[in-house]
Figure (cartoon, rainbow, N blue to C red):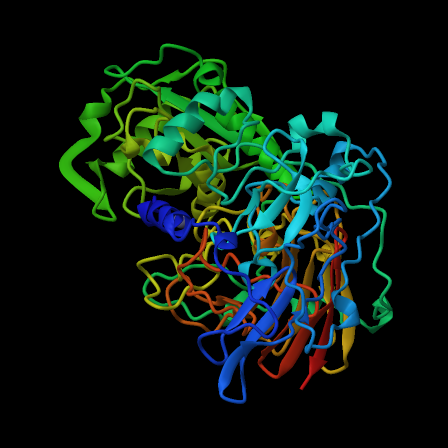
Length: 620
Ligand SMILES: [Zn+2]
């Protein structure tokens, strides 16, 4: 994983754009003159098209846009005392369409709900500063909330955000559908997954400032527990008796063609998994030249707690780590400097470290640790050095690994060499960023790696984009990877039919619980289509509406490109370039009634809600 300054640039670019409020432009009016035939303009929930009428170019009467979701939208009706209407009134010659009359949606009754359900409901209420869909909602007014959580009108501006605007008085009956006192824990102020988290846990508050300054991103430091709502989809679903046995959906990893040291795991194999109850042995070591000022728990406790807590939560409780941490650093009777070969090794033309003599270093560490540590039942260790170790010592990369280490209690297969967690400069990235350590666990164990599609590796091919922790490192692991690693159980996979039309309910991947979260349509022993449901929540709590929906990717274990095999597919109507937006493929998830045709199948979202997505799969 590399730090990406490009993302910061993209975010800035997307924000600079056009910030002039669109409502200063002349509104289209039916029959009024327009300039270019075919041009459309959206105004007050209607699309006006510039048409030729005789020799003149005039605006059409406007076509009402259907609202996609039952959002509490109030059509801004002019107050009765005002005689001149600000809305585009059809000219007498144009026949008014009945649908154009403003139909105020009845305000929902102000029911008080708990924080868990409130996240979704709050988002439905539209808050100032959240993203809007310019193509669909440009200039649309809605009742929402301003930054101070007061009821307000918001309007979708052409900069892509809902902004509070001066408007007619708020109807007195309007009340947001959530308990305002809950907002302190659930308010939704994010536009990108890198945005600052106002509710960052105390122990990460200072680090977040550092991360924003040096890495341009505040990655998730907490898990927002959103529970599956009690509402269920009404669409008739394919009965479970018509699903295929899970074995059909497990593409064997033996078919992976390994090229150029490509050891990524994309199919299933019988090796050790990151699942169930298992112990990680922490091996904290100090040296004659670099000693610890505090105990391992005092220096690294929050990192170890974070790994344990987050793996438990993102795995629906399937990955339960027992973190064995010695009370004190173990003394290695040598100077760290004595392992320095005098050479250096580098990564991405950015990071450079002293090249240590790994076999001698490993031998010294485990010789010192073996007498006091019982390695029985340990599959994975984390090797820690004191915070006093400078950041150019403990390198990161293939050149500095310890695999299959011998101890008195047997061989330890995987060992994670963690750099010191200091916050001095961007050179500290590999030690100090907590979210990164979740990713590195899978390089250390060799269970997962999906870097094809990261900026420099794939060229124009973007793989999963920034979906999934193993590529891009902004969002939670994709469900397929969780399944491979054992974080998701077989019982959470819907193995759909490859031949008959099926309709399946996929629960949100980000909500805690052992729900069915991944639909797999297997095509062969080497290819499958995978679909999961993305909703704001869990570690993806900063997803905006545009990033919610059914995320589809293809899986091909025969893809011989380095770290290849996955490709996120966007619906055809996404016209934005791949590099636009807050992250690569941010708008890929399918919304209600959208479909994707791929590999001879058509996949359509037929129902969507806080409960997830219902998708129909047809062979075409
Ligand atoms: Zn990586």
